[in-house]
Length: 285
Image (cartoon, rainbow, N blue to C red; front, side, top):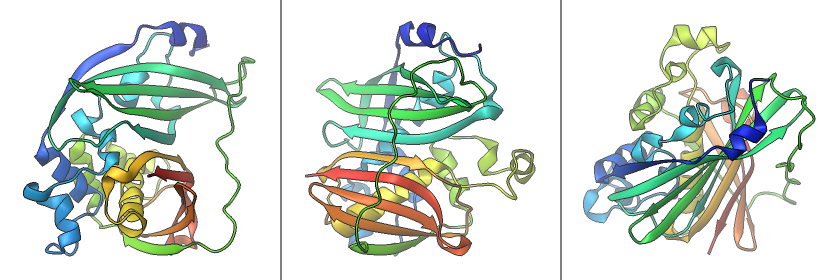
C-alpha cells in the first residue's frame, strides 16, 4: 500500500524557518481581491503599509506556504500519485494576531491518517511559532483517491447540520479574470491555475481558482461584514472545499450569526449557486 499509516504517523516532524514582510501581506491581500475601491479606508487597511493589518488566512501562504501540501506528501510512509490528490479542507487556529513582518519556525507533521474506503485522508498539521511563542496551527485535509480500504479508522465526520433560517447577511464578491494569476505569486505555482492546456488534462474546461484563494476571500467578507473589519477577533476558521471556482465568476457568501461564531456557505452565482465552500465556521471573540 502506498500509504503506510503507522510509518507516516511515527515520522519525525519537519522543521524549517519561514519569514515574511509587509510586501508579502499586501500581495496576498491583493490576490484575494482587496483594494476595491482603491481609496476606501476599509480597503487601505489591507493595502497600505502604514495602516496594515493581517487577515489570519495569510497564514496559509506565509513563507510561501511552506512546508505545504507537497512537503507533507514527501513524508515517510507516503508515496502517492499527485494526480489522485485533492485538497479537501482547511482549518486554522490563531493563537495571537499575525504581525505584518515576521520570522518564525514552522513544524510540519502528519497528524492523522483516515481510511474512507475509496480514499485515504491525510491531516497535515503545521505549527508555527516565533520568539514570543505560538502564532498559528494549520491543518490541511488531503484526500488521496484510490488509497483507502485497509481497514483503518474512518475518522470524524466534518459535515455540519445546515444552520436554521435565512442567513443574517448575504454578500457577493466578484472574482477577477486575472485573480488566479495574481494569487499564485504568493507561492502556489500549480499550472492548474494558469495553464489552459494543463487544466484540460486535469479535466477542467479552463484554469480554476485556488481553493485557498476562495478561502481567503470568504474570511475577508466575514471580517468586513460581521466583525467590524477587526481581524484580531478571529480565533479559528475551518472549511470544506465542495467545488471549484473559475476566474470571472461571482461568489455568493451567506452568513449566519451564532453564539461566538459565524456559519458560512459559499456558492458560484453563475452556475446556479453551485456550492464551493461548505461546513464553514469562523469562531471569534
